[in-house]
View 1 (cartoon, helix red, strand yellow):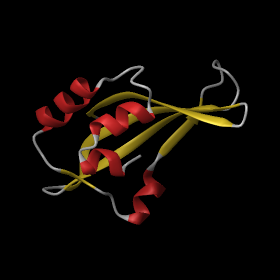
View 2 (tube, rainbow, N blue to C red; view 1 turned 90 degrees about the vertical axis):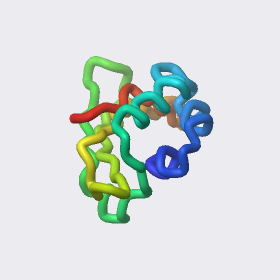
View 3 (tube, one colour; view 1 turned 180 degrees about the horizontal axis):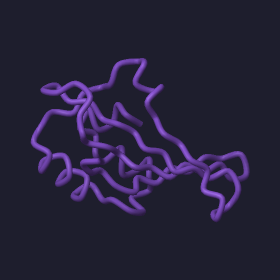
View 4 (cartoon, helix red, strand yellow; view 1 turned 60 degrees about the horizontal axis):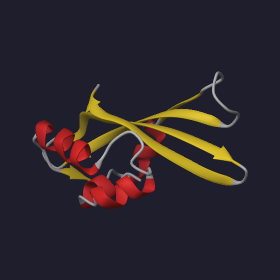
Length: 101
């Protein structure tokens, strides 16, 4: 998932998340407003993910905060917020927001 913003494959990101919360246009706008170049994070970046189970939602649902990296800054203030769920053996991902945290 973190490679899609870095590759600027916003259409792929919208397909992956079914465009339920953020459209291609909204993703492009969030990245453009930040004004830096998103890059693939280092491998150890996954240690920085913050995940919390959403107990009031369906079972096996988590809210995940993903820090993003930029060419200009390294780890940036830009963050992706994602809802991840496993239902019936299939996973579902919703991109809730991309913003400065």
